[in-house]
Length: 156
Image (tube, rainbow, N blue to C red; front, side, top):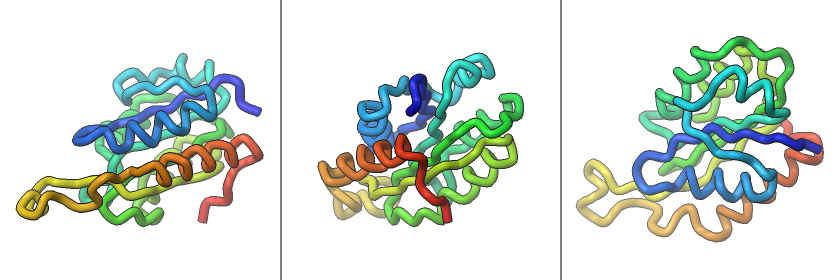
């Protein structure tokens, strides 16, 4: 359904979110870029765009959020949101969903899964969610991407 897919991804600490983006990109035939590479011309060339990062203090990475401020408004361009987090609650995608919607993107789905975290006090006991995202998470990300090509997923 989509021929030219772009995924904008920030993956800072352990590559958790990049692994999810790569699983989606494999299914969608997508190109993955960092927020600093996002331009209006890159968006013009694609027919689906994904935005994702780890969750930091309850929100996506600020660099991803601010990248949306730099671009021109889109009217009806299909987009999806994804994240990795210590506790993956899709409600944490809300701020980015709202920001992308304000820019005119048509959000056709969002995805969240667990990611390994070992900063702050969690270093004491070796971190949380060791081994995540795991193979099942990557398969779920691929399945999410397949469902996007079937017309999207209802965002609640």
